Length: 156
Image (cartoon, rainbow, N blue to C red; front, top):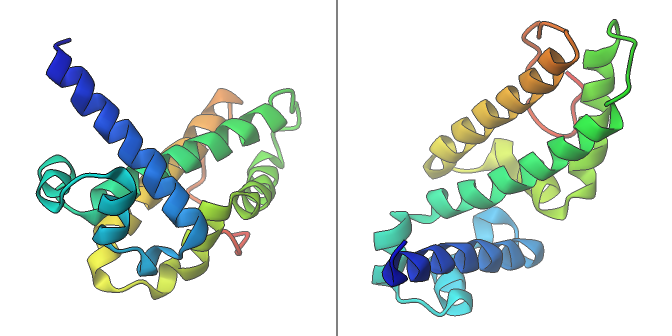
């Protein structure tokens, strides 16, 4: 890895951490590129050359938050032997862990109301979450039956 690659990787990591900090203070629809560029101390042109737009960076942050929450869910049901109700337990734990995560909670609270410019972000997060759910169920020998949860406030 070259010195430039290391600097670029650090910039991306720092930007993710900075947007995470912004998302703890603002709702997703209120975040502006200027919020990110000012806390990350990068120019708008550098921001666009690295991320292409707001959705890419938001997706990185929200995906990391989802992965963390699902890691906690997986630990909570690690020794679960009752497979019959595993999907129900998974859905209940999902609600608990997403509500505990301020960033995810705020995202899911408004996700249905977000304008169409966020459609790609919503689609990417839906797919990621379905994969995380499916992986947990398969680890326990349960074939997912296709339950799709729209947000953190609905069980099914």
